[in-house]
Image (cartoon, rainbow, N blue to C red; front, side, top):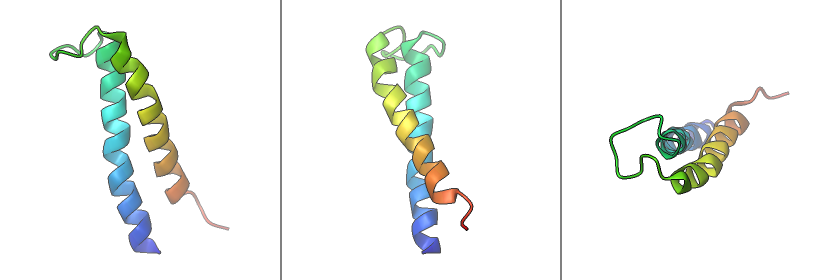
Length: 64
């Protein structure tokens, strides 16, 4: 079970990071890409960041 928790965290961490980067580039806060300033990337990145953050929280929450 512990291996599954580590695997889920390893997969969800980049999902969260990429989602946040896409949101920042979509809102023109993080420059330097073809995505900068295009709001559609913020729309794509927000659910990705929410799912990644939720998965990291869910698999690492304290057990009873």
